[in-house]
Length: 443
Image (cartoon, rainbow, N blue to C red; front, side, top):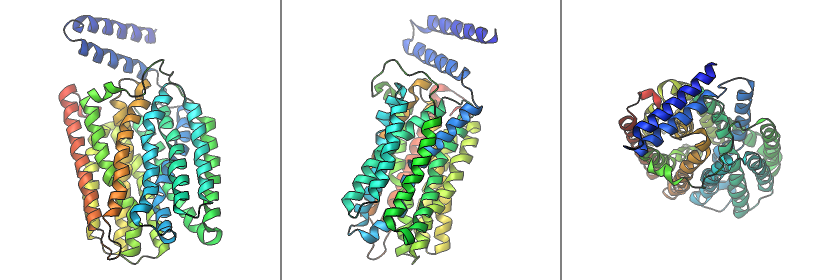
């Protein structure tokens, strides 16, 4: 009876609102109907329980073996610089293209997920990740590593990361930010475990078998995810690949541009601090390898803690100060001249990087008209942001002068774009407040 009353109430509100505004403002009617549709979706969400949390476990392992491998590239890069006769900028294209494809193809995988193709996507993606790792273990030349790590693993990761995130989002409402934070932390934990495995196994097993061991571990974890994840929301019956209407929402467009700017600068310290420690500070190869693990270890807390707070205060309200602090930290890298100082820097930077990787997801979900549009909306935004990732690391690498150990231009380049992204997030917050007149905690 209470459920029926709620449905009747929603229908009455919809009819009444539509009658009131249909002649005066058709756009307003569409906004009201979208809100009511989302309200009905929210009322049916489990928001906890075994089935919901098991989806979080599955998403966690998908992120562990997609973003986790992207976050491990700093370790691979330090190794590649020593064995391939290529410049740092050329080496950076391997990791950059891997991350670029992971994010770019989201516009396709997000829409396919919304149309009901979750299972084929994650099966194909899982195969490509494992196959790519096995092929990487056989590489002896730069172009082979590029094909295996950038193309094969990058495309495979794209097939699993966004569909798994979209499924988890449909199982939670008030705890959505926390659940997403746990899922995203899988990518950070992968960025801790895999570099440590690589460093410990490389001297005894060599590059080939070290990479194969990582591949076998990925196979087992991906099999678990494929077995336990189950979509909850029915697929969309129609809709185009690109939702052009999304970009008519100025809030969505400005926020997406902010992500683009942020992605240009965000990964520069993650990719180049190991090289900085090795060349500028005289760190041993072992110590430089562990910088990547420290960064990703700190970002685990950065993925979870802000998500819990964001559920209370609003994820965008939290993302703005996190962006500001990350930009400040990027410039403080310039003044670091000791190994303990660099280790402390990567820990702090890793924490706030975790914030900036996690918080956009609940923000974009909040800007979606219904849960059936989550995959396509998030995917389109990340696909545009992917070009920032593509531009950032190679550009930063081109600004390096390793012969004299000059990292200043790279450091300033990254910090400037992080501040640019933060400014656009502030503008998004202003647009939301002006248009919706909402509580600050809404976003």
